[in-house]
Length: 375
Ligand code: FES
Ligand SMILES: [Fe+2]
Image (cartoon, rainbow, N blue to C red; front, side, top):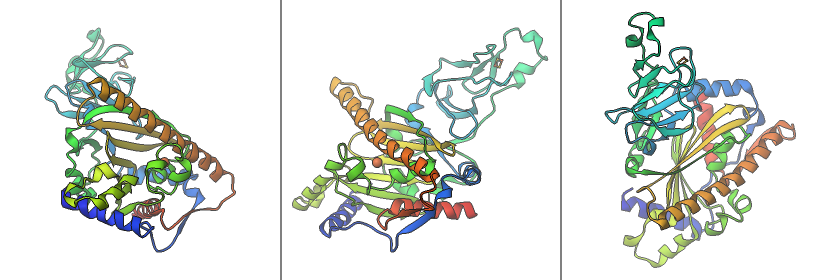
C-alpha cells in the first residue's frame, strides 16, 4: 500500500481515537436466528455463493515447487491442488479414475513426480495423466492413454489459489483487486498452518473475525491489552470489506513526522473477501483464513500464515512458534464463543440476533449475503 494511503488511514484512525468513537452505521440491525439453523438456507448459500463465485482455497505459498500439493474438502467435492513439472498450479478432483478412491490424504505435502492411488496403485503424473496401471492387460486397450484426473479449474492471484467458476476474478474483486495487488502477497513463504472444525455455523465465524467489539471481554487475557477498545476503521469494498484495527502504540504517531509512519507497525489491516475469506496483514506473519460450511453447525476453518521468508534462524523459528501459539489461543477463545452461540440459537431463546451500530463488519456482511442470495 502506498505510503500516502497509509498516512490517510492512520490519520482517520487517530481521529476516531481522539474523538473516542468508532466507525458506525446509522442504525443497529437484526437478523432472524434461522439464517444459522435452516438447512434450506445453507443449501442456498452453498449453491448461490460457494459454487458460483471465486472462492479462496489456499495460500499459494504452499504451492511453489513441482510436487507440492494441498488437498481441500471444503466445497463438498474432494479437491487436489498441485504444482506440475512446469511450475504451474493445477487443480483436480482428488478421486482415482479406477474405482473412485481418494488419491491423497493429509492437508499438504510433497509428491516426488507422481501420485499413486492407495487402493490398487494406479499412478498419475503431476499433470493428472494416468501413467501406470498394474496388470494393465485387464483393462481395455488404450484405456490408460485416454485417462486422466478430472480437472478442477483454479486461478492463482495475489498469493492465493481461487476456484474459477466463471465470473472474472478482477471484476468480482472490484477496487479490492488493486488494493490486494499493492501488498505483494505472491512473494510470501509459508510460516505455519492451523485447521479447526468448530461446531458453529460458518457465518458466526465470519462475524467474529470481523468485529472488534468482543475483544475486551473475549480476548481480555490475550490481544485486548494492546488494542484500542472497540475502535476500528471500516471501509466498504462491497461485497468485500476492509477493517483497520489500531494498536495502542498508534498514539505515538501523533509525536512523529508522518513521513516515518508505517501502517502495519501500528495497526492490523483486515480484509473480508466475500463471502468466506479473511486476510489479515500485520506486523508478523500475514494470516489468510478461510471458512467453509461442513454442515449447518460445523465449519472447516483453515489458517495459512506466511511471511517474507521461511523461518531459518533459531530466533525466527522461536518467534514463529510463539506467533502460532498465541494465534491458536486467541482463535480458541473465539471458537468457544461461537460454539456457545450455535447452541444458544437452537434453544429458542431469541428470535433474532442484534448487531450494534459499531458491529459494522457483520452488518455489511449480512447485507451482501442477502443481496447475493436474492440474485
Ligand atoms: S481405486 Fe484407485 S487404483 Fe483402484
Ligand atoms: Fe476474536
